[in-house]
Structure formats: structure tokens, C-alpha cells
Length: 131
Length: 62
Image (cartoon, rainbow over all chains, first blue to last red; front, side, top):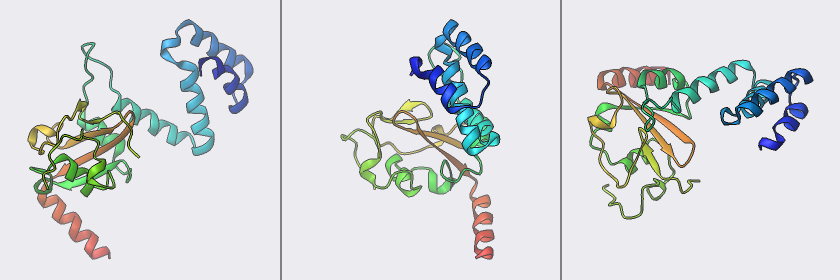
């Protein structure tokens, strides 16, 4: 992807060529930041879905991939996550406290229609199904 | 549908099918579920009274 980033930016975006050169120069200096890929993704989503969707995607991504605080783990912040996804019917599910507590994870995933069957709950096979 | 990356709840991989409790929630209301590498679902736990109000409103709209 790295080697194609410039090519794709020129083909699939409406950015001016000098601007693309600028982005690629910055990308080459710090490839780990994946600037070219991020710009490409943002430009494409903006062209197809509109700039407001880009903003929402960036916000959601920041909520789901928080900065690592101690070099090991990233801390999720519930309020940011709720704000980022509220209204997104596919991503955001609600359940009452009574229905949630004491429920097995596999059953919860099935009942919220996150997975189509208990067997697809993605927990290793040795689990005990507690239905 | 689901890949080989495992199931993660609030960033921690689930090794067995445990039951949910208060500790399963962030700030007492949110559970972040990740299936595989990048499929996320967010679960919000709402108070029972609030859930009853929402249910009544939906019923009234129907």
C-alpha cells in the first residue's frame, strides 16, 4: 500500500498535485503515521459519503482506538464512545440493566443480533454454553 | 462472518463464556465488543425505568 499511496491519491482524489507531493514528502519522513493512507481514506469517504461522514468516522476511530496511556494499554472512555456512536443503529445497541446483568456473553451477543448464532460468538470452543 | 482474531470486551480478550456483571461495563453503562480485528459493536446498558419509558413510546408510535 505504501508504494501505491501516491498513485492512488493522484487517481482517486481531487487534491492538487503540489498538495499531493507535499503529503507524500511528509509521509516519507514519518511513514509510521500513515499520513498518505489517512488522507486517501478521508478524501475518498468525503467524495462518496460527504464530509460530515468523514468527521464522524474520525471521531469514532478516535473513540475505538484511544491513545495508549502507559505504553501497554489504551483506555476506553465510555462517554466519548457513547457520544461517537449514539444513533448508529448497526453499531450501537441498547439493553436494560436487568436483561444485561448475569447473562452469558455468547447469549448477549446473540440476543442483541451482534452474531447470528451462539456458535459464532467468537469465544474459544472450550467454553461452556450457559443458556 | 467472524475471523480468527477472538472476542474482546472492553479491550480484553474473552477466554471463556463468562456471565456479565457490573465489572463488564465502562463507567457503569458501556460495553465495547470487538469481534476479530476491527468489527466493533457498542452496548449501552440503560436503567430499567428508562427502558420501560422507551418501550412505551415505541408502543405508542406503532
